[in-house]
Length: 170
Image (cartoon, rainbow, N blue to C red; front, side, top):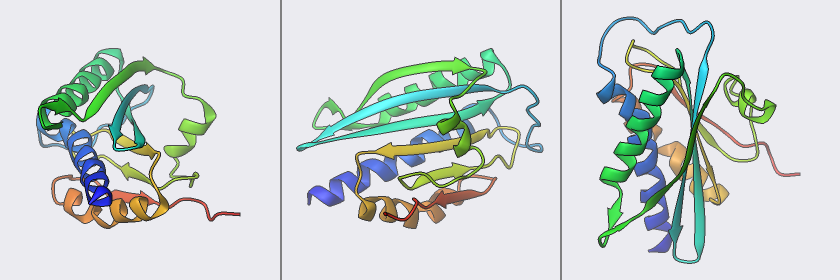
């Protein structure tokens, strides 16, 4: 039962974060070219049973205004849809907009493997941005289950949604 709750928590977060742009920024048109990106970095935390799961959502946006709008949309969707027994499941931790990312996070936008599976969503319409979703505190099995659910997200996303699998354990 505990694993199913964690799985639903993760899949729900992927769906809400990735599709927040689809619903809130409008539809249609070709994906935009972003010459000088400002990166939106939003962090959330969920306490479930004896576990803490952290979500880092990164998006490549046009400018500071687009970044702030995108970050607010993600936060609003996460807070308005993730309640269990009257309590907020995903707690908002922080949000920032920066034209510079550290090298670890920047590698995510090149779809380079890291130590956990993560979601890579490329834009396919003007409403979408380049998005990466990284979950910390999940097992390898939970990460694989998340990857297995991405075709459902692909149905609602115009661009390509991919699971970047973790580096093999040493």
